[in-house]
Length: 265
Image (tube, rainbow, N blue to C red; front, side, top):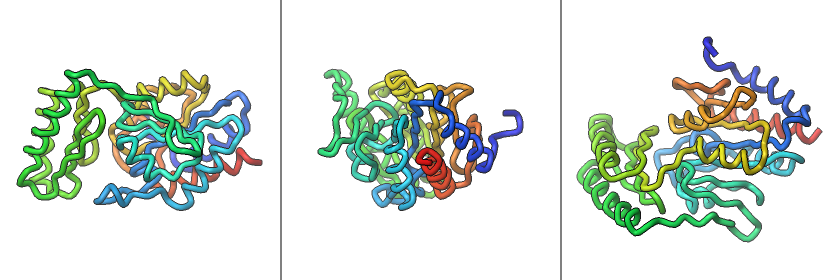
């Protein structure tokens, strides 16, 4: 849209139409986690879905003809531990490199297999990323099953910027893919993106319409992979190709709760 994304009121009107339209089923509701359902925190381990969001997701998952998914940059174990989502929910972690479905008894995982060469590169990435973080206050490294992440959220700008630049250069040398998000640089040894993962899930489910909401620059890959009939929602400020914008996670959860209520009428 040339005038930018439409507002929350326009989003609610469109979602009301979707809820009343049988041709939109199965409807895939796919959502980023941090900054979308859970307010951003300096310590990522303290992130939690807003209480109203837990109820909204439970009701959405119980609605006939609706599939629920979380699509996150977090590693799968981390996402599952924090998500508070009902059984049947699809979890896509590490920007699409990991996938599982929540069951009553834990996770039904798609197993990720690295080649020996990829495993060696992942080990080398971890060692060199540790050098990037060493001696820099507020910079720390997370290792995932397929990637290494340099976090800079707790660092001052004059520390964060060179650390991110070094991490990007490291990724270009040793990684298969580099994602530069809000205060993070993720270097993967597998090529993956939220857009590719979302497209694969929609095709598997045969979903004619996808609702996707996210706040980060990495979510633009998901927005770009969707079509004119799909509903893309940017949460918070920043340039975006999404059709709609809401102010913050509270507004995103309110819209989801409204959709859930209409689906249960």
